[in-house]
Length: 306
Length: 250
Image (cartoon, rainbow over all chains, first blue to last red; front, top):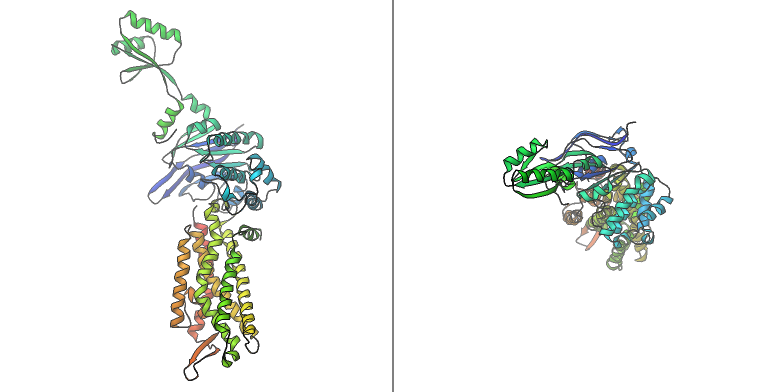
Protein backbone atom coordinates (compact mmCIF):
# COMPACT_ATOMS: atom_id res chain seq x y z
CA UNK A 1 0.00 0.00 0.00
CA UNK A 2 1.32 3.42 -0.95
CA UNK A 3 2.02 5.72 1.99
CA UNK A 4 0.16 9.00 1.88
CA UNK A 5 2.29 12.10 1.64
CA UNK A 6 1.28 14.71 4.19
CA UNK A 7 3.16 17.39 2.29
CA UNK A 8 3.67 17.53 -1.44
CA UNK A 9 5.00 20.50 -3.30
CA UNK A 10 4.99 20.83 -7.07
CA UNK A 11 7.33 23.23 -8.84
CA UNK A 12 7.36 25.36 -5.72
CA UNK A 13 9.25 28.55 -6.46
CA UNK A 14 9.85 31.72 -4.47
CA UNK A 15 11.54 34.76 -5.86
CA UNK A 16 12.29 37.98 -3.95
CA UNK A 17 13.06 40.61 -6.56
CA UNK A 18 15.75 39.07 -8.72
CA UNK A 19 16.80 36.57 -6.06
CA UNK A 20 15.53 33.06 -6.56
CA UNK A 21 15.23 31.56 -3.07
CA UNK A 22 13.36 28.37 -3.87
CA UNK A 23 13.49 26.89 -7.34
CA UNK A 24 10.95 24.34 -8.65
CA UNK A 25 10.91 22.30 -5.47
CA UNK A 26 9.24 18.89 -5.45
CA UNK A 27 9.09 17.90 -1.82
CA UNK A 28 7.32 14.81 -0.54
CA UNK A 29 6.89 14.12 3.14
CA UNK A 30 5.40 10.68 3.86
CA UNK A 31 3.02 10.18 6.75
CA UNK A 32 4.69 9.00 9.95
CA UNK A 33 8.15 10.03 8.80
CA UNK A 34 10.76 12.20 10.39
CA UNK A 35 11.74 14.17 7.33
CA UNK A 36 15.08 15.90 7.63
CA UNK A 37 15.24 19.01 5.48
CA UNK A 38 18.91 19.57 5.07
CA UNK A 39 20.88 22.32 3.42
CA UNK A 40 23.47 25.02 4.01
CA UNK A 41 22.49 28.36 5.53
CA UNK A 42 20.59 30.42 2.97
CA UNK A 43 19.70 27.40 0.83
CA UNK A 44 15.96 28.14 1.07
CA UNK A 45 14.88 25.83 3.92
CA UNK A 46 13.06 28.43 6.00
CA UNK A 47 11.45 30.04 2.95
CA UNK A 48 10.12 26.65 1.87
CA UNK A 49 8.72 25.90 5.32
CA UNK A 50 7.18 29.38 5.50
CA UNK A 51 5.43 28.77 2.20
CA UNK A 52 4.10 25.46 3.49
CA UNK A 53 2.71 27.30 6.52
CA UNK A 54 1.23 30.08 4.38
CA UNK A 55 3.55 32.71 5.87
CA UNK A 56 5.04 33.45 2.47
CA UNK A 57 3.26 33.29 -0.85
CA UNK A 58 4.82 31.08 -3.53
CA UNK A 59 5.78 32.90 -6.71
CA UNK A 60 4.73 29.82 -8.66
CA UNK A 61 3.96 26.20 -7.88
CA UNK A 62 1.57 24.52 -5.50
CA UNK A 63 1.49 22.89 -2.10
CA UNK A 64 -0.69 19.99 -1.04
CA UNK A 65 -1.23 19.46 2.67
CA UNK A 66 -2.99 16.33 3.96
CA UNK A 67 -4.05 15.63 0.39
CA UNK A 68 -5.73 19.03 -0.17
CA UNK A 69 -4.26 21.90 -2.17
CA UNK A 70 -3.23 24.72 0.17
CA UNK A 71 -5.21 27.88 -0.65
CA UNK A 72 -5.81 31.06 1.30
CA UNK A 73 -9.40 29.95 1.89
CA UNK A 74 -8.58 26.59 3.47
CA UNK A 75 -5.18 27.55 4.92
CA UNK A 76 -6.30 27.89 8.54
CA UNK A 77 -8.38 24.70 8.41
CA UNK A 78 -5.47 22.68 7.01
CA UNK A 79 -2.98 24.23 9.37
CA UNK A 80 -5.17 23.44 12.39
CA UNK A 81 -3.64 19.95 12.26
CA UNK A 82 -0.12 21.40 12.13
CA UNK A 83 2.29 22.64 14.76
CA UNK A 84 5.28 24.74 13.89
CA UNK A 85 8.44 26.30 15.20
CA UNK A 86 9.92 28.59 12.56
CA UNK A 87 13.37 30.18 12.85
CA UNK A 88 13.23 31.38 16.45
CA UNK A 89 10.72 30.39 19.12
CA UNK A 90 7.62 32.60 19.34
CA UNK A 91 6.57 33.89 22.75
CA UNK A 92 5.20 36.79 24.76
CA UNK A 93 8.08 37.75 27.01
CA UNK A 94 5.93 39.59 29.56
CA UNK A 95 3.72 36.55 30.14
CA UNK A 96 4.58 33.30 31.90
CA UNK A 97 5.17 30.08 30.01
CA UNK A 98 1.77 28.81 31.09
CA UNK A 99 0.03 32.02 30.00
CA UNK A 100 1.75 31.79 26.62
CA UNK A 101 0.46 28.27 26.18
CA UNK A 102 -3.00 29.32 27.35
CA UNK A 103 -3.20 31.82 24.48
CA UNK A 104 -2.21 29.24 21.88
CA UNK A 105 -4.39 26.55 23.46
CA UNK A 106 -7.39 28.89 23.20
CA UNK A 107 -6.60 29.73 19.59
CA UNK A 108 -6.09 26.08 18.67
CA UNK A 109 -9.22 25.09 20.55
CA UNK A 110 -7.53 22.11 22.18
CA UNK A 111 -8.20 20.88 25.76
CA UNK A 112 -6.66 22.76 28.68
CA UNK A 113 -5.06 19.54 29.88
CA UNK A 114 -2.78 19.70 26.85
CA UNK A 115 -0.91 22.55 28.54
CA UNK A 116 0.16 20.27 31.40
CA UNK A 117 0.99 17.44 29.01
CA UNK A 118 3.22 19.49 26.72
CA UNK A 119 4.90 21.22 29.64
CA UNK A 120 5.67 17.79 31.02
CA UNK A 121 6.98 16.55 27.65
CA UNK A 122 9.40 19.46 27.29
CA UNK A 123 10.20 19.43 31.02
CA UNK A 124 9.15 22.99 31.77
CA UNK A 125 6.67 22.26 34.58
CA UNK A 126 8.77 24.01 37.18
CA UNK A 127 9.20 27.14 35.07
CA UNK A 128 5.55 27.40 34.09
CA UNK A 129 4.88 30.40 36.34
CA UNK A 130 8.04 32.22 35.33
CA UNK A 131 7.96 35.09 32.84
CA UNK A 132 9.31 33.92 29.48
CA UNK A 133 11.59 36.97 29.26
CA UNK A 134 13.46 35.37 32.18
CA UNK A 135 13.85 32.02 30.37
CA UNK A 136 17.16 30.91 28.90
CA UNK A 137 17.35 30.42 25.13
CA UNK A 138 17.09 26.67 25.59
CA UNK A 139 13.95 27.07 27.70
CA UNK A 140 12.44 29.38 25.10
CA UNK A 141 13.20 26.79 22.45
CA UNK A 142 11.52 24.11 24.54
CA UNK A 143 8.53 26.40 25.08
CA UNK A 144 8.39 26.86 21.31
CA UNK A 145 8.28 23.11 20.91
CA UNK A 146 5.59 22.86 23.60
CA UNK A 147 3.54 25.45 21.71
CA UNK A 148 3.93 23.47 18.50
CA UNK A 149 2.89 20.27 20.28
CA UNK A 150 -0.33 21.74 21.72
CA UNK A 151 -3.26 19.78 20.37
CA UNK A 152 -0.88 17.02 19.29
CA UNK A 153 -1.07 17.86 15.59
CA UNK A 154 -0.67 15.36 12.77
CA UNK A 155 2.23 17.32 11.34
CA UNK A 156 4.99 19.16 13.13
CA UNK A 157 7.26 21.56 11.25
CA UNK A 158 10.43 22.46 13.11
CA UNK A 159 12.92 24.88 11.61
CA UNK A 160 16.37 24.43 13.16
CA UNK A 161 14.93 23.44 16.55
CA UNK A 162 18.33 22.92 18.16
CA UNK A 163 19.59 26.43 17.43
CA UNK A 164 21.07 27.97 20.54
CA UNK A 165 20.86 24.83 22.64
CA UNK A 166 23.79 23.43 24.58
CA UNK A 167 24.98 19.89 23.70
CA UNK A 168 22.83 18.30 26.37
CA UNK A 169 19.82 20.29 25.19
CA UNK A 170 20.49 19.28 21.59
CA UNK A 171 20.62 15.62 22.56
CA UNK A 172 17.44 15.98 24.59
CA UNK A 173 15.63 17.70 21.73
CA UNK A 174 16.74 15.01 19.28
CA UNK A 175 15.53 12.23 21.54
CA UNK A 176 12.21 14.00 21.99
CA UNK A 177 11.71 14.49 18.25
CA UNK A 178 12.56 10.84 17.58
CA UNK A 179 9.79 9.68 19.93
CA UNK A 180 7.03 11.80 18.36
CA UNK A 181 5.97 9.57 15.43
CA UNK A 182 5.81 6.41 17.52
CA UNK A 183 4.27 7.88 20.68
CA UNK A 184 1.89 10.47 19.27
CA UNK A 185 1.57 9.57 15.59
CA UNK A 186 3.08 12.89 14.57
CA UNK A 187 4.86 13.32 11.25
CA UNK A 188 7.84 15.60 11.73
CA UNK A 189 9.63 17.87 9.27
CA UNK A 190 12.83 19.11 10.82
CA UNK A 191 15.23 21.41 9.05
CA UNK A 192 18.89 21.75 9.82
CA UNK A 193 22.19 22.68 8.25
CA UNK A 194 23.88 19.93 10.26
CA UNK A 195 24.10 16.55 8.56
CA UNK A 196 24.98 14.73 11.78
CA UNK A 197 21.84 16.03 13.41
CA UNK A 198 19.56 14.91 10.60
CA UNK A 199 21.39 11.58 10.38
CA UNK A 200 20.55 10.91 14.02
CA UNK A 201 16.90 11.91 13.80
CA UNK A 202 15.45 11.47 10.36
CA UNK A 203 14.35 8.46 8.38
CA UNK A 204 13.69 10.52 5.24
CA UNK A 205 15.81 13.33 3.94
CA UNK A 206 15.58 16.14 1.43
CA UNK A 207 18.75 18.04 0.60
CA UNK A 208 18.36 21.54 -0.74
CA UNK A 209 21.03 23.59 -2.41
CA UNK A 210 20.53 27.11 -3.73
CA UNK A 211 16.79 26.60 -3.65
CA UNK A 212 16.83 23.31 -5.54
CA UNK A 213 16.18 19.89 -4.07
CA UNK A 214 19.26 17.90 -4.99
CA UNK A 215 18.39 14.70 -3.14
CA UNK A 216 15.23 13.26 -1.66
CA UNK A 217 14.81 9.76 -0.38
CA UNK A 218 15.19 7.69 2.73
CA UNK A 219 18.23 8.07 4.96
CA UNK A 220 19.00 4.42 4.25
CA UNK A 221 19.23 5.23 0.55
CA UNK A 222 21.54 8.14 1.26
CA UNK A 223 23.73 5.82 3.32
CA UNK A 224 24.08 3.44 0.38
CA UNK A 225 25.86 6.24 -1.46
CA UNK A 226 28.45 6.24 1.26
CA UNK A 227 30.98 3.86 -0.36
CA UNK A 228 34.42 2.61 0.58
CA UNK A 229 37.35 2.21 -1.85
CA UNK A 230 40.93 1.01 -1.85
CA UNK A 231 43.54 3.48 -3.14
CA UNK A 232 46.86 2.23 -4.50
CA UNK A 233 49.99 4.21 -5.39
CA UNK A 234 52.68 2.32 -7.20
CA UNK A 235 55.92 3.07 -9.05
CA UNK A 236 54.45 2.01 -12.44
CA UNK A 237 50.83 3.13 -12.55
CA UNK A 238 50.18 2.23 -16.20
CA UNK A 239 51.20 -1.40 -15.63
CA UNK A 240 49.28 -1.50 -12.38
CA UNK A 241 46.18 -0.23 -14.16
CA UNK A 242 46.31 -2.95 -16.78
CA UNK A 243 46.99 -5.59 -14.12
CA UNK A 244 43.99 -4.49 -12.09
CA UNK A 245 41.77 -4.42 -15.13
CA UNK A 246 42.93 -7.88 -16.12
CA UNK A 247 41.86 -8.97 -12.64
CA UNK A 248 38.34 -7.81 -13.47
CA UNK A 249 38.35 -4.75 -11.17
CA UNK A 250 36.73 -1.44 -11.96
CA UNK A 251 39.52 1.11 -11.67
CA UNK A 252 39.38 4.91 -11.51
CA UNK A 253 42.35 7.26 -11.45
CA UNK A 254 42.68 10.05 -8.94
CA UNK A 255 45.91 12.04 -9.00
CA UNK A 256 48.71 9.49 -8.44
CA UNK A 257 46.31 6.93 -7.05
CA UNK A 258 44.31 4.13 -8.60
CA UNK A 259 40.99 3.50 -6.90
CA UNK A 260 39.31 0.12 -6.81
CA UNK A 261 36.07 -0.83 -5.04
CA UNK A 262 36.30 -2.17 -1.50
CA UNK A 263 37.02 -5.88 -1.60
CA UNK A 264 37.87 -8.62 0.87
CA UNK A 265 41.28 -8.98 2.55
CA UNK A 266 42.27 -12.12 0.64
CA UNK A 267 41.82 -10.39 -2.70
CA UNK A 268 43.88 -7.42 -1.51
CA UNK A 269 46.63 -9.81 -0.40
CA UNK A 270 46.54 -11.53 -3.79
CA UNK A 271 46.81 -8.19 -5.56
CA UNK A 272 49.82 -7.17 -3.50
CA UNK A 273 51.47 -10.50 -4.26
CA UNK A 274 50.91 -10.02 -8.02
CA UNK A 275 52.41 -6.52 -7.86
CA UNK A 276 55.49 -7.89 -6.07
CA UNK A 277 55.85 -10.72 -8.54
CA UNK A 278 55.95 -8.20 -11.40
CA UNK A 279 58.39 -5.98 -9.48
CA UNK A 280 55.98 -3.08 -9.36
CA UNK A 281 56.89 -1.01 -6.32
CA UNK A 282 53.85 -0.52 -4.06
CA UNK A 283 54.24 2.78 -2.22
CA UNK A 284 50.90 3.10 -0.55
CA UNK A 285 47.70 1.14 -0.06
CA UNK A 286 44.90 3.03 1.71
CA UNK A 287 41.28 2.63 2.56
CA UNK A 288 39.24 5.56 1.25
CA UNK A 289 35.81 6.34 2.62
CA UNK A 290 33.29 8.31 0.63
CA UNK A 291 31.33 9.21 3.72
CA UNK A 292 27.90 10.69 4.15
CA UNK A 293 29.64 14.01 4.68
CA UNK A 294 31.39 13.71 1.33
CA UNK A 295 28.11 13.00 -0.41
CA UNK A 296 26.46 15.90 1.35
CA UNK A 297 29.30 18.22 0.49
CA UNK A 298 29.23 17.08 -3.10
CA UNK A 299 25.49 17.65 -3.28
CA UNK A 300 25.52 21.02 -1.57
CA UNK A 301 28.65 22.37 -3.16
CA UNK A 302 30.71 22.38 0.03
CA UNK A 303 28.82 25.35 1.40
CA UNK A 304 28.04 24.04 4.78
CA UNK A 305 29.25 23.39 8.23
CA UNK A 306 29.15 19.82 9.35
CA UNK B 1 -14.83 37.41 20.40
CA UNK B 2 -12.36 34.75 21.52
CA UNK B 3 -9.51 36.57 19.79
CA UNK B 4 -10.65 39.89 21.28
CA UNK B 5 -10.64 38.43 24.80
CA UNK B 6 -7.16 37.10 24.14
CA UNK B 7 -6.02 40.58 23.13
CA UNK B 8 -6.97 41.83 26.58
CA UNK B 9 -5.32 38.77 28.14
CA UNK B 10 -2.11 39.45 26.19
CA UNK B 11 -1.78 43.02 27.42
CA UNK B 12 -1.60 41.94 31.04
CA UNK B 13 1.34 43.66 32.77
CA UNK B 14 1.77 46.05 29.84
CA UNK B 15 0.58 48.97 32.02
CA UNK B 16 -1.52 50.40 29.20
CA UNK B 17 -4.13 51.64 31.68
CA UNK B 18 -1.41 53.43 33.61
CA UNK B 19 -0.25 55.29 30.49
CA UNK B 20 -3.78 56.42 29.74
CA UNK B 21 -4.42 57.35 33.37
CA UNK B 22 -1.20 59.38 33.52
CA UNK B 23 -2.32 61.36 30.48
CA UNK B 24 -5.74 62.08 31.97
CA UNK B 25 -4.32 63.01 35.37
CA UNK B 26 -1.83 65.39 33.72
CA UNK B 27 -4.69 67.06 31.85
CA UNK B 28 -6.78 67.24 34.99
CA UNK B 29 -3.95 68.80 37.01
CA UNK B 30 -3.31 71.28 34.22
CA UNK B 31 -7.01 72.16 34.30
CA UNK B 32 -6.94 72.70 38.07
CA UNK B 33 -3.90 74.92 37.76
CA UNK B 34 -5.07 76.97 34.75
CA UNK B 35 -8.77 77.29 35.52
CA UNK B 36 -8.92 77.34 39.31
CA UNK B 37 -9.65 81.06 39.60
CA UNK B 38 -12.20 81.90 36.89
CA UNK B 39 -13.53 85.40 36.21
CA UNK B 40 -17.33 85.85 36.44
CA UNK B 41 -17.53 85.67 32.63
CA UNK B 42 -15.45 82.52 32.55
CA UNK B 43 -17.68 81.03 35.25
CA UNK B 44 -20.74 81.80 33.14
CA UNK B 45 -19.47 80.00 30.05
CA UNK B 46 -17.25 77.54 31.86
CA UNK B 47 -18.72 74.26 30.65
CA UNK B 48 -18.82 75.64 27.11
CA UNK B 49 -15.16 76.63 27.28
CA UNK B 50 -14.20 73.18 28.58
CA UNK B 51 -15.24 71.61 25.27
CA UNK B 52 -12.87 73.98 23.51
CA UNK B 53 -9.96 73.35 25.89
CA UNK B 54 -10.35 69.57 25.65
CA UNK B 55 -10.20 69.72 21.86
CA UNK B 56 -7.13 71.92 21.70
CA UNK B 57 -5.28 69.92 24.33
CA UNK B 58 -6.12 66.64 22.65
CA UNK B 59 -5.18 67.91 19.19
CA UNK B 60 -1.64 68.43 20.43
CA UNK B 61 -1.27 65.71 23.05
CA UNK B 62 -3.24 62.75 21.72
CA UNK B 63 -1.13 61.79 18.63
CA UNK B 64 1.82 60.53 20.70
CA UNK B 65 -0.57 58.90 23.19
CA UNK B 66 -2.23 56.99 20.35
CA UNK B 67 1.24 56.06 19.07
CA UNK B 68 2.15 54.68 22.50
CA UNK B 69 -1.13 52.78 22.82
CA UNK B 70 -0.84 51.22 19.35
CA UNK B 71 2.79 50.37 19.95
CA UNK B 72 2.05 48.73 23.32
CA UNK B 73 -0.61 46.60 21.66
CA UNK B 74 1.42 45.62 18.59
CA UNK B 75 5.02 45.31 19.72
CA UNK B 76 4.39 42.31 21.98
CA UNK B 77 4.11 40.21 18.84
CA UNK B 78 7.15 41.79 17.18
CA UNK B 79 9.34 41.23 20.24
CA UNK B 80 8.60 37.54 20.49
CA UNK B 81 8.18 36.86 16.74
CA UNK B 82 4.58 35.87 17.48
CA UNK B 83 2.98 37.09 14.27
CA UNK B 84 4.28 34.11 12.30
CA UNK B 85 2.89 31.75 14.92
CA UNK B 86 -0.47 33.52 15.12
CA UNK B 87 -0.82 33.66 11.34
CA UNK B 88 -0.75 29.87 11.22
CA UNK B 89 -3.72 29.78 13.60
CA UNK B 90 -5.89 32.68 12.51
CA UNK B 91 -6.38 34.83 9.44
CA UNK B 92 -4.25 37.98 9.35
CA UNK B 93 -7.33 40.14 8.89
CA UNK B 94 -8.92 38.89 12.08
CA UNK B 95 -5.70 39.54 14.00
CA UNK B 96 -5.69 43.16 12.85
CA UNK B 97 -9.40 43.46 13.59
CA UNK B 98 -8.99 42.11 17.15
CA UNK B 99 -6.17 44.56 17.92
CA UNK B 100 -8.15 47.44 16.42
CA UNK B 101 -11.27 46.65 18.45
CA UNK B 102 -9.22 46.16 21.62
CA UNK B 103 -7.55 49.56 21.20
CA UNK B 104 -10.80 51.28 20.25
CA UNK B 105 -12.48 49.95 23.39
CA UNK B 106 -9.60 51.26 25.47
CA UNK B 107 -9.84 54.75 23.95
CA UNK B 108 -13.64 54.71 24.32
CA UNK B 109 -13.18 54.24 28.05
CA UNK B 110 -10.28 56.69 28.18
CA UNK B 111 -12.19 59.56 26.55
CA UNK B 112 -15.29 58.83 28.63
CA UNK B 113 -13.08 59.15 31.70
CA UNK B 114 -11.60 62.35 30.28
CA UNK B 115 -15.03 63.95 29.85
CA UNK B 116 -16.07 62.82 33.31
CA UNK B 117 -12.91 64.33 34.81
CA UNK B 118 -13.38 67.63 32.99
CA UNK B 119 -17.01 67.86 34.11
CA UNK B 120 -15.81 67.19 37.65
CA UNK B 121 -13.18 69.88 37.16
CA UNK B 122 -15.88 72.32 36.05
CA UNK B 123 -17.83 71.75 39.22
CA UNK B 124 -14.70 71.91 41.35
CA UNK B 125 -13.66 75.34 40.00
CA UNK B 126 -17.22 76.65 40.41
CA UNK B 127 -18.57 76.94 36.87
CA UNK B 128 -22.16 77.99 36.69
CA UNK B 129 -24.93 75.75 35.48
CA UNK B 130 -24.46 72.27 34.09
CA UNK B 131 -22.83 70.85 30.98
CA UNK B 132 -25.09 70.70 27.96
CA UNK B 133 -25.60 66.94 27.66
CA UNK B 134 -26.39 66.91 23.94
CA UNK B 135 -23.31 68.92 23.00
CA UNK B 136 -21.08 66.96 25.33
CA UNK B 137 -22.28 63.64 23.87
CA UNK B 138 -21.87 64.90 20.30
CA UNK B 139 -18.44 66.28 21.13
CA UNK B 140 -17.48 62.95 22.73
CA UNK B 141 -18.61 61.07 19.63
CA UNK B 142 -16.59 63.29 17.31
CA UNK B 143 -13.57 63.07 19.58
CA UNK B 144 -13.80 59.31 19.62
CA UNK B 145 -14.01 59.22 15.83
CA UNK B 146 -11.13 61.64 15.24
CA UNK B 147 -8.84 59.90 17.72
CA UNK B 148 -9.82 56.47 16.43
CA UNK B 149 -8.42 57.69 13.09
CA UNK B 150 -5.09 58.44 14.77
CA UNK B 151 -5.14 55.13 16.62
CA UNK B 152 -5.83 53.10 13.47
CA UNK B 153 -3.09 54.93 11.59
CA UNK B 154 -0.65 54.23 14.42
CA UNK B 155 -1.80 50.62 14.76
CA UNK B 156 -1.26 50.03 11.07
CA UNK B 157 2.29 51.38 11.32
CA UNK B 158 3.05 49.51 14.53
CA UNK B 159 1.86 46.19 13.14
CA UNK B 160 3.62 46.60 9.82
CA UNK B 161 6.94 47.96 11.06
CA UNK B 162 8.87 46.03 13.69
CA UNK B 163 10.97 49.04 14.65
CA UNK B 164 8.57 50.95 16.87
CA UNK B 165 10.57 54.16 16.59
CA UNK B 166 8.95 54.78 13.19
CA UNK B 167 5.35 54.89 14.47
CA UNK B 168 6.41 56.77 17.59
CA UNK B 169 8.15 59.45 15.55
CA UNK B 170 5.07 59.62 13.31
CA UNK B 171 3.00 60.30 16.43
CA UNK B 172 5.34 63.08 17.56
CA UNK B 173 5.35 64.65 14.09
CA UNK B 174 1.55 64.47 14.10
CA UNK B 175 1.54 66.29 17.39
CA UNK B 176 3.75 69.10 16.02
CA UNK B 177 1.59 69.33 12.90
CA UNK B 178 -1.55 69.59 15.02
CA UNK B 179 0.09 72.33 17.11
CA UNK B 180 0.79 74.24 13.91
CA UNK B 181 -2.78 73.70 12.73
CA UNK B 182 -4.25 75.06 15.98
CA UNK B 183 -2.42 78.34 15.27
CA UNK B 184 -3.59 78.57 11.67
CA UNK B 185 -7.21 77.48 11.42
CA UNK B 186 -10.01 75.51 13.04
CA UNK B 187 -10.28 72.63 10.61
CA UNK B 188 -8.10 70.35 8.59
CA UNK B 189 -8.48 67.46 6.19
CA UNK B 190 -5.41 65.78 7.61
CA UNK B 191 -5.78 62.86 10.05
CA UNK B 192 -4.15 64.93 12.79
CA UNK B 193 -6.64 67.76 12.32
CA UNK B 194 -9.67 65.73 13.39
CA UNK B 195 -9.68 67.10 16.92
CA UNK B 196 -9.85 70.64 15.51
CA UNK B 197 -12.41 69.87 12.82
CA UNK B 198 -14.61 68.19 15.40
CA UNK B 199 -14.54 71.09 17.88
CA UNK B 200 -18.07 72.24 18.55
CA UNK B 201 -16.98 75.46 20.23
CA UNK B 202 -14.99 78.42 18.91
CA UNK B 203 -13.20 81.11 20.84
CA UNK B 204 -12.99 84.78 19.97
CA UNK B 205 -10.81 87.22 21.84
CA UNK B 206 -12.49 90.42 22.92
CA UNK B 207 -9.88 93.17 23.03
CA UNK B 208 -12.17 95.59 24.88
CA UNK B 209 -12.97 93.30 27.78
CA UNK B 210 -9.71 91.33 27.50
CA UNK B 211 -11.75 88.16 27.74
CA UNK B 212 -12.21 85.07 25.65
CA UNK B 213 -15.71 84.64 24.33
CA UNK B 214 -16.83 81.07 23.60
CA UNK B 215 -19.72 80.15 21.35
CA UNK B 216 -21.08 77.11 19.55
CA UNK B 217 -19.64 76.84 16.10
CA UNK B 218 -21.57 77.40 12.89
CA UNK B 219 -20.01 75.02 10.41
CA UNK B 220 -19.23 76.29 6.92
CA UNK B 221 -19.54 73.71 4.09
CA UNK B 222 -15.78 73.23 3.94
CA UNK B 223 -15.64 72.67 7.72
CA UNK B 224 -18.44 70.13 7.45
CA UNK B 225 -16.46 68.39 4.71
CA UNK B 226 -13.49 68.26 7.09
CA UNK B 227 -15.71 66.55 9.69
CA UNK B 228 -16.86 64.11 7.03
CA UNK B 229 -13.23 63.46 6.22
CA UNK B 230 -12.72 62.11 9.76
CA UNK B 231 -15.07 59.24 8.95
CA UNK B 232 -13.41 58.75 5.58
CA UNK B 233 -10.04 58.41 7.29
CA UNK B 234 -11.54 55.88 9.70
CA UNK B 235 -12.58 53.63 6.83
CA UNK B 236 -9.35 54.22 4.90
CA UNK B 237 -7.00 53.38 7.78
CA UNK B 238 -8.97 50.36 8.92
CA UNK B 239 -9.12 48.92 5.40
CA UNK B 240 -5.50 49.81 4.61
CA UNK B 241 -4.24 48.34 7.89
CA UNK B 242 -6.18 45.14 7.44
CA UNK B 243 -5.20 44.66 3.80
CA UNK B 244 -1.53 45.58 4.23
CA UNK B 245 -1.17 43.40 7.32
CA UNK B 246 -2.81 40.48 5.53
CA UNK B 247 -0.36 40.79 2.64
CA UNK B 248 2.69 41.22 4.85
CA UNK B 249 4.98 38.21 4.66
CA UNK B 250 6.68 37.04 7.83
